[in-house]
Image 1 (cartoon, one colour):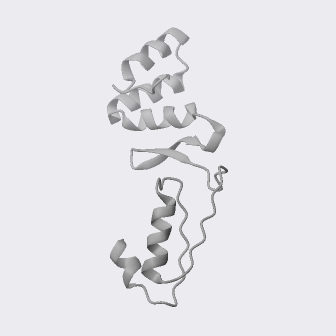
Image 2: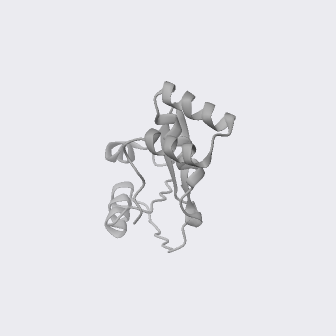
Length: 121
């Protein structure tokens, strides 16, 4: 990416948005020296673009967290189901359609949960 910035024509203006650049001042100074243009750094503790977390499972993206909204149990359950082998998923879905007892649902849930679990901390 350094070469791209260096080789850009003078008429191209740059805007950078990053919540993860630890050396903002050093980076912006380098940009200013390289492009021979003034650079303005604007900092804020407010995150204008909410941070979202997704899990790719079963050829789909499942939203696990949106901004400050917290963890999505529904997204986690859908992603967990998508990670199960098709045969296990079909058994579980059949059991839910038949409306099995609460104890059998709990038993199925325990036996079909993928080997990873969300961190409780």
